[in-house]
Length: 620
Image 1 (cartoon, rainbow, N blue to C red):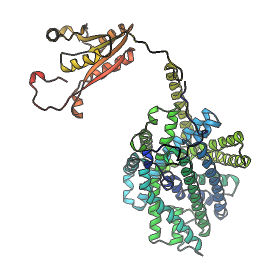
Image 2 (cartoon, rainbow, N blue to C red; image 1 turned 90 degrees about the horizontal axis):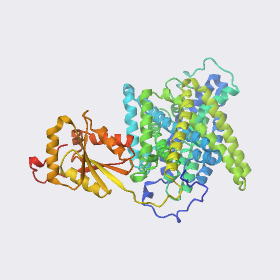
Image 3 (spheres, rainbow, N blue to C red; image 1 turned 135 degrees about the horizontal axis):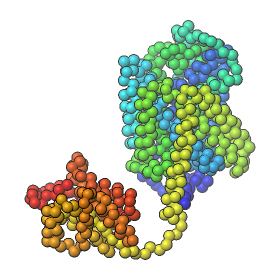
Image 4 (cartoon, rainbow, N blue to C red; image 1 turned 135 degrees about the vertical axis):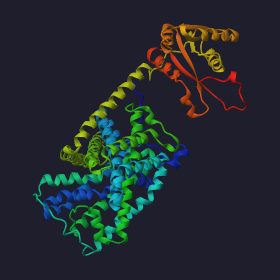
């Protein structure tokens, strides 16, 4: 039996209708949303245009002449995606983006495919962003290159720590680098467009096109697909609407439009400068650095852009830290991920989602030894799957609701679905042998895993009769079994707790033939104490402790059985290594082999205020 989840078809509450929330200060403003959730898209300006140029340069000058048309096509797709996700934000104010759209209009399986693609993209984004940022840093300081495998986890740990402080806190930290980066790129574009010729053209002679190809449809499609890497991260704001301050929908929509506008301006501006300055790919020099050098020279402005790019590439991982925990919360609410992903800690932090993202990204970085080129072929395949499903779902949305102007909107989303679908196919085919096949394996595996988790929660819900009115509760006779080792204050407290739980309390102790003296001493102490509780001695000839108790509890299964296991909670954490862990072993065996309700009774040792006589000291 499923627990219903409220979806976006209910009207979003306005700020005046919602109760005040002290946690609002830990949520995002429009500027904060751009800083926390759009760094991935912003930083893609550093490698998106270069990805286009690397393909078109294979056809020489004729191919480079298509840089602006290809970029304009990508900008048109960006416009479609921005407008589409603006509508997604309004329709799904609880977040989820492509997952929410696909779930409502395309079915459960399609929604899980969208969710799996987003999860994969978020994890890869963190790994690629950290690796790219470290690569840019080691390019500026070559002496750090041997330390790349250590620098990547260090940068990841820093970003993870900042996000554990809360998404609003991380946004405040990242606002300044974002403003510097965007301002520097826009300034380069403006100055470059005002120049008749580049300040320097020292790289032009080094740019040669070997093995020229004809400019054909396949080449243009590959250039388009490569350049679409600049669109990764556009969906992050729609996935994280609950992270914004009230009114959440309006703030998120404004942030989405601002992101689309800024990204389009930067992409088109850089494309214009590539053609104006006749930029070509050069080994060891990025296209963005050539554009910057041509516009402002090799002075202070050049280094401001370079260092801002390094910072943004490293911090672009923060987009995933803002988006994936919210997506994981929705999946957990729909019973497709463990429910602990829905838990929020102080400062509105989904700590388990952040932890999962950090661990999986760290594993990828370690496996790739921090090499960006090993990870890039895996990047951006998943996000196009999510784009396509989201666009297709929105077409179904317009066909179902049919508001004013629905035909134009459906046509826009349909065209966007076609473009992103083509991009997904082209990127997958072109990157298949470079590691793209891993995504084709990981994506369905993740979908199957989420389906199995959903079925497991469904069976649990049926067993618990969730959604149905249960029978009235009736008291049942019960027996409380307390395994004891000796007569002590720990035994007294455990028996006292047991007497408040059931009708009959039985203290059990396992005895062995070799321990006859210890058994007699225990019986003498027990009789002298006379607690008024039934005592059962379980004889065992094989020196076992757990099995006799499990067998006794199983034989008493005709009653409602509780087992109270008394344990010491030491005063200091390090003292846990002094314990014999028998309680944990016994509890595990009882839960595995019996239907008893097991309670590990922890007796906390208080700090000593005065010396305790030796005969009263406890044995751990």
